[in-house]
Every structure is written in C-alpha cells, then in structure tokens.
Image (tube, rainbow, N blue to C red):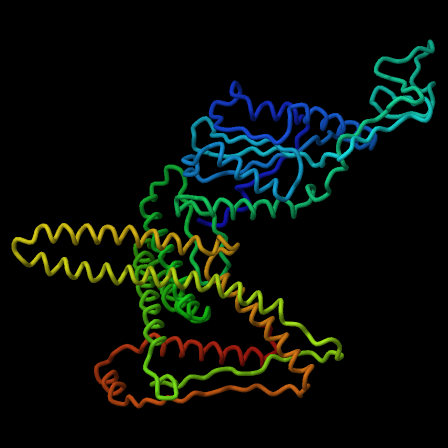
Length: 520
C-alpha cells in the first residue's frame, strides 16, 4: 500500500472529556463496541476537567478550554480476528510505556463494519505524587467566571449583596486543590502526532496478519516497491492483488539479494534496468497498460531471483592454493583510507561502543542469513520432490508413493511460506523495517568504528592523509574459448557484466558532475 501515516492516526482536542469518555465506552451508545480499557477511575476525568477549567479561567484565554486529547487509530480489518481486549490493551500499552498519564481506550467498528479503529483519550497532565492544597492567607474573592478579583466590592451588587455565582474563600481555608501537574508541552507539538503515527504504524506492522494490510513506509527512490491500497468495491481488486503479490515477491528478493552479499547499488541497477527503464519505454510506446506492467514485473522478479542465485554461485567459486578466488574478469575496488580531521591529541579514543554495535548488528544479520538459507534449502527440497514425483507418475502401480510425495511437497510449501513470513518479521523484532535498514545500520556502524580506529591510528602514529587509491584485481583465469563462443552464438552478457557496465556509466556521470561543481 502507499504511505498512509498521514491519515491512519488522527488527533482531536476534547472540551468535555467526561462526556466523551462516557460516549466511547457506553454499550448503549455504541453499536459495535468490542472492548474498553482504562488505567484510571471514572472520578479521574471529573477532577481533570475541574483543574483544567480552573487554570483556563485564571489564564484569561479566549476560546474553549481543552480538557484532554484523543487519538483515533485506524486498524487493518484482519486485526478484528485477535482477542479484542488483548489487542486493545497491547495497542494502549505502547502509548503508556512512554507517557505516564491517565487514559481510556475503546475498540470500535463503524455501523457498516468497514472501519475498525481505536479511540484513545488521554490527559495532558501527570498525577502529582502528593496533592497540592493552597491555603488562603487572607479572604479571597471570585467573580461569576471563577476569576480571582482583588476586593470584595467587585463581587457585590448595588445593594451590597453577593452576586449569584460569586464566592468568598475565608482566610485559612483551602482555595485551590491541584491533583495534577502542569500540562505537558510535548502534546501540543506536531512532532508528538508524527511520532505517534510512526510508532503505531510499526506496532500494527508487527502484528498484522494480512501481508496486503501492512503499513509500510518506503524510502523514495529505494530498491523496494510500494504495494497499492485496495479500496472498497474496487472493480480492479483482483488485478491489484496480483500486482501487489509481484511487488512483495520483488521486495523479498531484494532482501535476499542484500543478505546474500549484494550491494544496494547493484540492486538499484537491477531495478533501473528491469523495471524503471522498461516501464518508461512501455509508457512511451503503448501508454498506460496494466497488463504490460504486470509482464514487466514478472520478468523483473525472475531476473532478480536469478541475480540472487548468481551471487550465491560466485560466493563459492573455485580458489587457488593461496585462497584467492579464480576470476575470469577484472575487479576494481576503492581502498581509499577514511579521511579524518586533525584533532589535538588527548585521551586515546575508545572503540568499545562502536565494536559492541557492530557485534549486535552482525548477530541480527546472522539470524536473517540463516533464515534465508533455510528458505533456500526448502526450495531445493521442493524441486527435488517435484522431480521425484514426475518420475513416479511415469510408472505403473505407484499410486501410494505418488500420494506420499504429493503430501511431502504440500508440507514443504507450507514450511516455505512460514519461513518467508519469519524472514519478513525478523527485522521488525529489532526495530527495523527490512534487510536494507539492517545492512545500512551495519554499514554506518562499521563506518563509525573505522573512524574511531583511524583516530586511534592517528593518535598512535599520525601520518599524512593518502591520496585516492584503487586496487585492481586482474582476471587470473583465461576463458577466451567461452567468450568466443558467446560472441559467435550471440549470447547475452551476464548479469555481472551488465551491472558493471551500468556502474561504469554512473561513475562517468558522477565525475562530469564533480567537474561542473554540481551537488550529487
């Protein structure tokens, strides 16, 4: 689906909090009320409203007093299948983990049961540890609006009588009781709502059952593809679901490519050559044609899946006696040391924190790689079983064996789907959306560690910064016969060759922009 965090969480200001709490939690007033949760007694809201009204009257501010605030959180339809009370408590606990305030929440459906949502009413004030009671040091006078005035004369009528609605607090009496601390300024900021949108999006994505209902926020221009939201009674629902399936398969294979060792730029190049460019060409030649776009996606997913396999094959290529890989193409690597600004020599920099972060992220990646390897193993097992089944079908009187193989294949397919879902959920368990976020975090952590290590090196024995350096690893396996055969038979170049060509074009464009003083 497209990015929805600007609409799935809304906020409103409440001017009658007691009435609103009663409205959202009343079985008589709500047709489809599933669960109610509150961490305070009913009297809490009356006390809160009273203090807010007093403070508002004293401030002299025009308008209407804000007694509390409310979040309305839209939920994917499939979450109705969860235990209602457990779902509501879990969603509310996410809010309460950060904000220690009173709240009341209710899980609702609208009348037509097309909109599942949570109302979360909360106080802007925390409860005081000890009640604050203010004692009058002299007689105090209040007018009809509850505003404190200086003299008794200001609250008397022409006959010298106390006007209705006015009051006098005698010396020594309590003139004000405060159960709550001042309002938190954070709740008034746009940053609060934006943060809650993101927090609730992450929580929903962790527990949502239907993959099509996930609220994913994709990086603009990144290697992943955003899925489309299917509106109510959409006549193209079937086509959109098929399109979403292909997009999800693309995204899964992006994760697998990254976990197998691909660089982000390589995946981006694959996306550009297999999706962006063909789509642009299709639009120029044929206009908007969903069928053609579906075919492009199908080819692209197959291409990327093949690229993952290509990476896997080269990862375990032959090596010489010294352990060097046997390559039939040149490889060029940037080995320029990280430049560090000159700093006065003080205490030797510590890399303990950076090393711990690298180790933490490596453990996450290891779990994800292990899960990806499990998927690969199951896929291979399915291929073998299907091959065996094909052979059995050719024979007579092997019906029992055929059924056993079919059962094993079906079991493996169920295992495969569960393994894929587990791979999807692994990043979220550690606060990341996908494999790319984890690999980026690792790249950043290694970069930070390298900075500290370079600082340590400079502290130990400072040396001048070296110029740009590149290491060229020449091909060490001659494959003239193979290359000649490819040319003679008109074979297409390998994925690696095509990616290398595109990277070379990008490098040349970058150099031209640098010469022209343009920002990249």
